[in-house]
Amino acid sequence: MFPVQYHGKASTDYVAVKIEADGQSSSWNVPEEVPVAFVYNRRNYSVMMATPNDLVDFAVGFSLTEQVISSADDIKSLDLYLSDKGADLRFKISDTALEKMDLVLRRRNMVGSASCGLCGLENAEVLFKKLPPVTKMPVELDADAMTKAMQDLAARQPINQKTRSVHAAAWVSLSGEIIAVREDVGRHNALDKLLGFMALRNINGLDGFVLMSSRCSYEIIEKAARYGVGAIVSISGPTAFALRKAKEANITVYSRKGKNAVRIAT
Image (cartoon, rainbow, N blue to C red):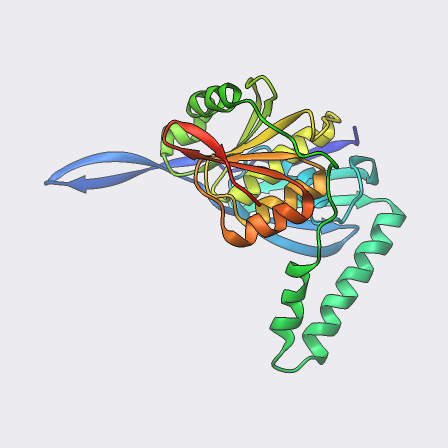
């Protein structure tokens, strides 16, 4: 594990606000959403709006799924500068990872400065880059295991219990036991946090499945594929584009129908 240092204090995961209905006042908890900046070797890379919890997991997972790093070993140190306005995640990464990231950033700048009105379509080509398969044989999940995990998820979401308005990503064993849950206002952020948790513990993406509390979008498939996850169960249905990407990566997709989960043909 790389050295981690905290500077300052992060804002709370949620805040209480006053509401009025039928002439009466009460309170309601709403999730916090703050800018989280990713800075690698003093290079500004991206700013994400996120819930300010599990930030080390977020740092690792986002860096992996963005392919800035190949593994957590590429991170040499991480400093988290925290305040009620947001968070700066300042990394020191390996020379190999930095060289690769600089090449990506140069390509971004070239497209942005040299292209005409088609630059948006040129950037969109990244979405259609074929995903490599994560496994030769599709992962088949047990129906009872999926049902158990879906039933148990709500009790493992402390922020959502307070706000009823955040997403969750869970890592579940093949027998249906929830091993870890990460929450965020963004479903893709929740998954990045979960994948970061898994990477720091060297968890194999074929030894269980990801359970999402929301829709399975193409971002979920891409991030899962880049980690090597073989199966995803989503409470809500997938998009057609997500299913096409899942077919490329040979990721098995299940979605809830009634009380059970059903496999979606890809």
